[in-house]
Length: 84
Image 1 (cartoon, one colour):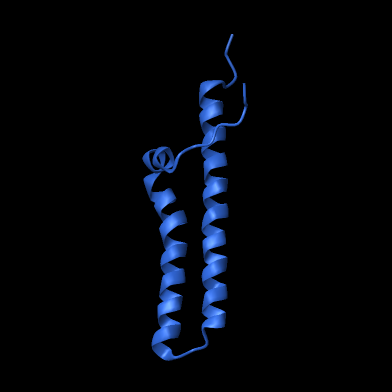
Image 2: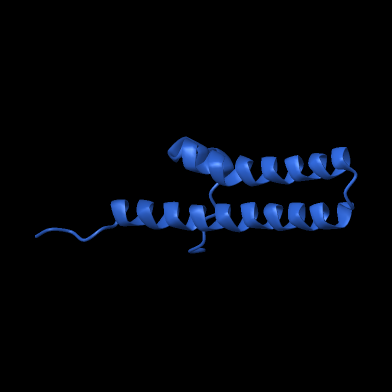
């Protein structure tokens, strides 16, 4: 039996909707905003594409960390120390 259980986004959003939304949508909105800003102002897209890539990577890593945090909290709640 595998000790690794991957949480779905739906489960994370049900458990902590505000934190999950902030970690997912805020970096993506910043990336899209920066891309739009560079287009409107005629700035070279190299910087804004790099920024957008970093923000997408940040969102993925942050959600992975959030999922691990949630798994640890759930494990501690389910199999925490038993009182005698």
